[in-house]
Each structure stands twice: as structure tokens, then as C-alpha cells.
Image 1 (tube, one colour):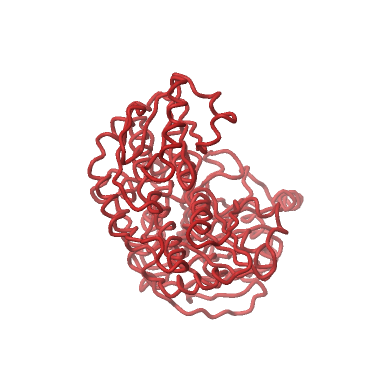
Image 2 (cartoon, rainbow, N blue to C red; image 1 turned 135 degrees about the vertical axis):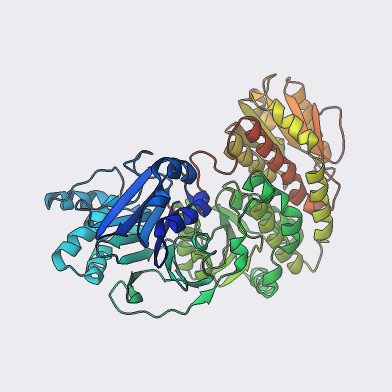
Length: 586
């Protein structure tokens, strides 16, 4: 939910940190701050707003020193204020920290530290780490010992980076991402390789319950019991460096527009894993599938397609609900876990619950260095490149393609999976978006939108409504077409807009009947279909395609509609309010 970064090297730290924070801003953007060490003291500058805004007013990148830490925040504890922004210094100012995650016992620790005279300025759980480190450091004046004693008392999931007044950096992780970059002229510690990939592609991935100390003598890694740990340096793909918008006004539009390519490349680098996953699922007694948000909508489509084409029953589960249904996983089952980042806290919790029953984990993930991959028996990469826009677009269609490939393998090609046709269909939609722009303008003052679909199009209706919520802040609701008479018709009147997903397939006639029922109540109908109808007030046409492949195509005009509607309302589509890309806390 936040970006953390640290640097120790030969160059000026602040400009490097600010640039890294800007590249990771999709992880959190309520506030930003930097702390550097220079001339035996730690200086902190921070404020509310996005990286460039705060840097303009606070001159973050002008802080002196070759050692520093930085942070962008997505608030969990405490309001969005300058005081609650990171970094947080200890009450003496000898230590400053940046933190991602949640400290569950921060209230108890805070009360105990206050008894010992340590003061607090913020409402955050994070400030406890700074003062607890200071308390333990005051007792021993040994950094290694103070870190060991500190992590022994912290409860929760976290990753933090601390700078000490002697110029030492230290970092620790427990169930939150933390990556070390090893450069020719310095070391980096970050929650994301995007924070430093332009400087080095050599990285180390510390395991859970490990901490790092970096000083003038170099890099040392220890486990939480203070035992030295050795890790190999690995190289990350340079594709992560390619996160610039280029000709596009926003990352979101860039990523929507990349889908003709990404649907063709999804899963191409994990063919063996797809074959292995297909075999496991085919012979499993019980199969479950889980995800959050967009990934859960992909899971719902998978349920439909596995049943119809692979003749396999697969039970979908919202990841955040797993803790309330711990007994649903039967022993030695298969859990398919879907996550763009591979760091979603709810997904990882569901995986942990399933693993306790002896279940095998198959993951579909974009970040192949993520925590989810490390906890999986088999992992399949989306191969769609970095997705910076907070609202998932190309990662969703890539997830679907990987699922399609698994199903098609199980049913020996019964789906007629022609991704070239899918790619061409998406290109056609992207090249002829004038109707979509026109409809988007009509949504500027709309307060409610309903998105209706049947069968496998209902999860697309749910995903479409999610995009509209995220980008336009309009109340949007996905509806199953057959349920209109059981309640939703009461909402339909002349002020309503209803988006009908109605390709010319086996659901077409029933969905058209639903559209007429809605039209009779005075609502305005936006039809997404490859076949025109007089019932539509506005028709957004899509190319015809093989029936099971329609979800890959019909979601694209809704993504565009949400994007253009956000632009017309003067909202930033890349960074929707109150949301973060990688939800690493519960």
C-alpha cells in the first residue's frame, strides 16, 4: 500500500529517491517524504500530495547527503496530514524510518514507550518502529542488536527501512515486499524494483524474517535470530525499466491500448507451467479459485468456462472471505490464486489457509518475483509488463488468457482459442473509439450506472462496474440479467443509465428482452454488441468472435468508457482517490 526506498552510495541520495518514488507512486500517493543523513544529522522533509507536488513545495530532492530513505503513503492509520506522512523520526531524531504494512500491537508498544519517556507526534502505527528502534539502540548502541530486539516485539506484517545517525541503513521484512538493489556505485532497498531498476538490474530478495544492514563496509543480511544469511544476486528483466507513458496522456490509456499485444503474449513464457497446471487441475478431486477485485471477476469467468468447456467444477472464493470459511478447503485440493502484484494480503492469507490443509497452490501472477510465487507449487506469468494505472486493465485480459489456455489444454482445443482474432478485434475497438468518447460525455452528471450481463457476461458486468467506480466515482453496479424482476427493476427510471453487454451469442435474445424491460421504465440503454438494435439509445459496436472469447473483447470498450468519462470529469485516471495498486495490508 506504500512505497519505501533507501539508498546508500556515492551519489546524492535525494534526487535518486525522489525519482524512485515517482516511479512507484502507483503503490500509494496520499503523501510523500524523504530523509537524508549528512554532517552527522538526519534531515526530514515531507508533505501531503503527489511526489511532484510535494517536491515542488518542499524541495525534497535538494536535501544533501549520499544516504537516505523515502516513502509514498496510502493511509491506513491516521488521517492524510503532513505529520502522518513518512519518514518518521524517533523522538530524539537519531533514527528515522519508512514503513509499509501494519503493526498490530502498536497501541501497546506506544503506551510502553511513552512510560519510558519517548514521545509521539503522529497518529500512525509506523512511528512506533522509530521509537522502538531508538529504545533498543539506547540500551546497547548496537544497530544489529537493536534491530533484532525490535522485530522480536513487532506483531503484524511489515517492511521498514531505517536510517541511523551514524549513516547506517537497516531494513527488515515480514510478509511485505522488500528488494535490495546492488549497483556499482551504491545499494538500494525498495518495495519495488521500479524504485531503482534504471540504476541496476542486480537484485537480492530477502526472505521473510530477515533484516539487512548496509554501511560503509558493505551489505550484511541476517535472520531474525541474528544468524548471517547468504543470498545469490539475480538479474531482473529490463522490461521493468519501460514504464514511461510515451505518447499517451496517462498510463491507464497506454495499458488499455497495449492489450492487442498483451493478449497475444500472455502466458507465452510459462507454457510448461500451464501444461503442469492443466494436468493437476484435470486430476484434482477439488479445485478452488481465489482473487480480489478484478482478479475475483476473472475467477468468476473461470468458474463458468471450466464448467462448460472442461467439465470441471471449480469453486470461486473472494480472498478476503477465506478467513471466515477456513473449513471449505478439503485436504489435498488445488487452489488457483490470481493476483497482478502477487503481494495482495487477502490472497496470501487465503493461500496460507489452503496450504495448511495440504492443498497445492497454482498462481497466475504478473510479478514473478512476488511473495505469491514463492508460496506456489506452480506459477504462471501474465507476461504483460508493468501495470502502473491503479485500475487493472491489461492484467485482467492477460489473466483471462492464461485461464483460457489452461481450459483449452484440458479440453484438447475445444475452445478454438484464436488469440490473433482477439487481438485484431481489440485493435478495431481501439481505432474507432469516437462513439465511446461521445457516450462518456453523457455520463458527466450521471449519479448511477447499472451494467447488465448474462452467463459469462455477468462477471464482465461486475468488472465493468468496477472500472466505472474506480475511475469516474459514479455509483455503478453489475447486475445478472435474469434477476431484474427480483428487485433491480425498482431502480429503473428516466434518470438511469444501463450498460447492456449483449454480444450475438447464446445469451443474446434473453438479454435483449431484459433491455426492453428496462427501456419500458424510461432508462437510457447503452448497448455493447456486434448486432444493432432499436432498443439501444447508444450502440457501441464490437467485432463478432467465437463465443467463449467475447469476454476478452467486450471489456475493452467499458475500460475506454470509464477512462474517457474520468477525463471529462477532470479526474486523474491513473491514481483514483482512496485506492492503491498493490493492497498489501488487510
